[in-house]
Image 1 (cartoon, rainbow, N blue to C red):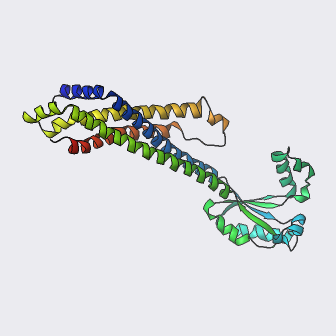
Image 2: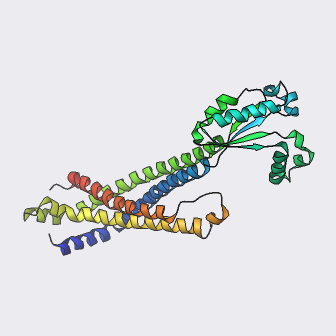
Image 3: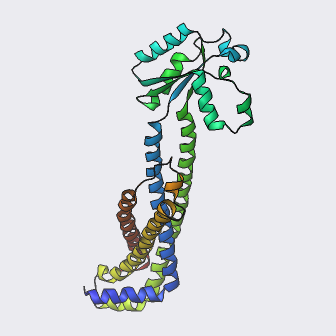
Length: 305
């Protein structure tokens, strides 16, 4: 097969169906940009889980005098020294516990003033109204239920709270947004495939005379099909290249510069450039193979060779 002939046919096809080719390029670019963005979002959620789950604590809040009058869990009165010692001893025997930190009422009051000092309620609170607590770091954050089962309902314990539950709600929202992006990506991918099939069909119909002559002179089916397949592949590859540009530019301006989220949101450990760069070959390969396969199967139906 002469490469010059194939390349010339590709150029003719792209120019002849310029508007449809442009639509294919844009659809492929947007759908694959969403695909790459979804992959990066999955990596980001995974990185955030690893970072934050390692820092979350389980808190055992102990009854104080105020709770004894208002909370059914503290109906037997404020926690005693013996109860506190027993709780700490039991925590030390549990294999799931990595470390235990005691927070007194004075410490709790100090932390509250640091975080909510501007609140009108802060001026009316006193240290004896705060709760003592044990802050527990688990070896495996998924084992929260072991602590809850062991200490919920025990005398002197007001409640057992897991910070991981708050993070789970956040990560659930992020995963929902990621699935929505994947749904939009899938829809745009279907649109791109339909445009590729229609573009190939129109191109094959407009060049039916040339392909008929080639068939009469004994050209093989692959020789006839190759320009159409490569035409779709080139359009897809251009779209994939644009998608890569969108990802790189988006990462650069939203995280590093422009919006500079990396400096404004210090609590989020953003994925690095290595995660972005590893997605680019996958996007390019998809942008090349997807249109080529779509064109190949479309030609089997619309181009009798």
